[in-house]
Image 1: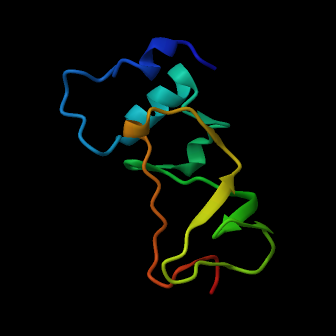
Image 2: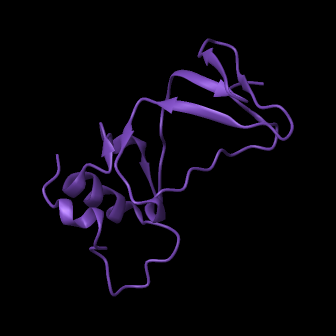
Length: 109
């Protein structure tokens, strides 16, 4: 639901020192006000983070793949696009996705 679409272009938290990270209450606010994350699930909200869920497809170096029980392996210097179950409405300054782990894969590798 988009209650305040002007927040797509005007930062509702100004003149605060927003910086590079949105806090959990800011993520929740933007999810309610502009539909930042849809569907939004409270259980996926963490301090200064939201856990996106892996959807049903992904691309590895422009090669389409379907998600299975196998881990998603990322080749060295590879590029992976992963479809999420959530839709994101965001200015690029609000969105930063980080895959944690040093083993270059998502899932049990």
